[in-house]
Image (cartoon, rainbow, N blue to C red; front, side):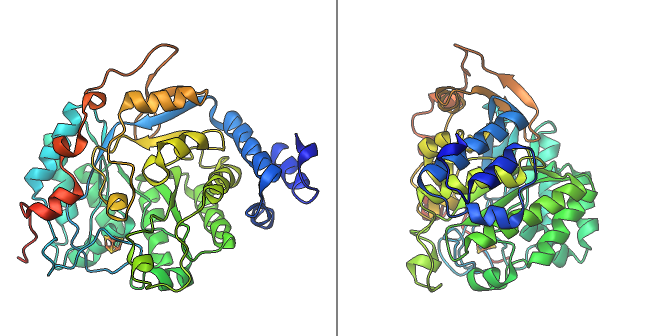
Length: 410
Ligand code: SF4
């Protein structure tokens, strides 16, 4: 296969196939591959995937709850947040968050994922109290919640050091943290796209402290805006070095920018911003993630929310081994202009995986297999019988229009 590959790329891919760690300079050389070299990169990523995680491809049955869109920050890529003075600001009471979590549990979800904006003057212990309330009602539901930005906010607002704050969250029943608010872990880029956002060193402190306390996290990258390919590789090299130290990451999730409603693009706030990643960039990103990270972070997720179910399915042949979650509610990408809806049911995720030639399995948040679906088997989930997810579960559009849970300054 490598006979078809250009002379510069061939030795790099050969070394990877020999089991050598991909050096950052070699990885950077791979960020520009096209044509046959791109196919070869994807094929090598697929081979590493086969060696590292086998033929099973997974998904999780989960629900997102974004309990408020009111936020004191102004990240230019974010179309979800609202200023506290705006009419479209909402804040779900704890009882409503618990109700949504219970509804998901009753529909077979194993996880609820909670992330939100940072409302002004939030009680610093809010995240701890919310965790406790959910776990009191649903002790066996896995709570995957609070970005490093939210953990930092809770720590600052409560006056508790990050370590103590995380320890209290864990004691209250928090399962894992999303490794979001990472975007690109490069301070210069962050200062351009989200001045005032959690810094690189603060992000690293929250994540490594969580890992030290036994709280595992995911890891992410947001790309397709003003970063260069060299930033991708430095970002992945940094995650790889953390993982070698802590082993705390469960997965890596590339998140391409949804640009159409993002203020950085729509209002021209960031000069030179790209309109998201191209399809080729998306393939390169997932394949490179497998090459850079797969030996240490075994699970590479393709996001159907960002890429659409069809491209996400295709990425299963380019290094990915997971399609993420059913979600049920999706606000952040939808508000930014994503057009892929907010629910993909378990049977449909199985169909996509099986058609890609892989063995579908439902997993839990920590990648323990819940159920594997052999030939002819398919999930029998009520989620697959729901025709109109927006009517059944509500949506971001309805939430901001209805005023039912309008944010009021307390
Ligand atoms: S990305 Fe998060 S912190 Fe930034 S504005 Fe949006 S909700 Fe707020």
